[in-house]
Length: 276
Image 1 (tube, one colour):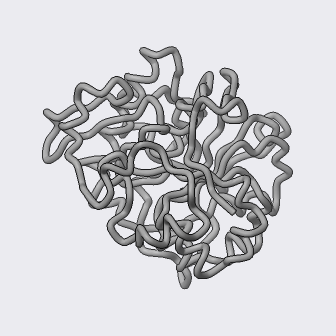
Image 2: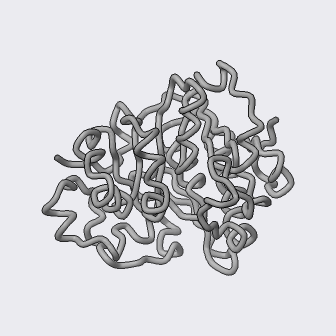
């Protein structure tokens, strides 16, 4: 078995300028009206938002994104209950966690899975390279030269597939134009999903459940007694908001508009279109 690295040039990855909805896990998701139009539009889920498939009949799921292995360890029931072979895009660390905790998913659905990686850490230092090479993961792009080496975003300023703002403080921010070469992190998996959608030639990107200001509250699929810790509060001002604003500007210049549907965070962003 092998899991391929994401390659935007694969015919099956091209969304052909379709509108794409990305569902995050903010509490505002609970207030959405999931009509036929919403559920039939190409949809990408992140982390626990996949549980929306239990109550709503999504007919065009084009992606499921997980970047942090802790999600697998903290919420294995999301995958055991709702993952049915939807196209999965995840980091090596996530696949390692799935392999350890839910190995049957790897054997059953490995052909529907693709590896994505953060551009500044192409292979996570915690991933054993011997395991990567000798077990089920065999297809990696030319990123091997960066194994176990963290690179600064500023070093990518002249790379054609990244737009980097190294003047931003306290540290540089950026956005990827092609996740084949890696995604840029900003503190939330929804940011990765947006870069993936653009890389796959989405015509427009609609963001749902990017609430941010109420990140201390349980996600829509959690309750007060069972909610995973969130680091959003610390990252909102320094990384998440300026990164999404950069993404909104850059993608609009490339012909892909990005819309924020969260009434909670509507005043945070200056370069995302507001839509309710």
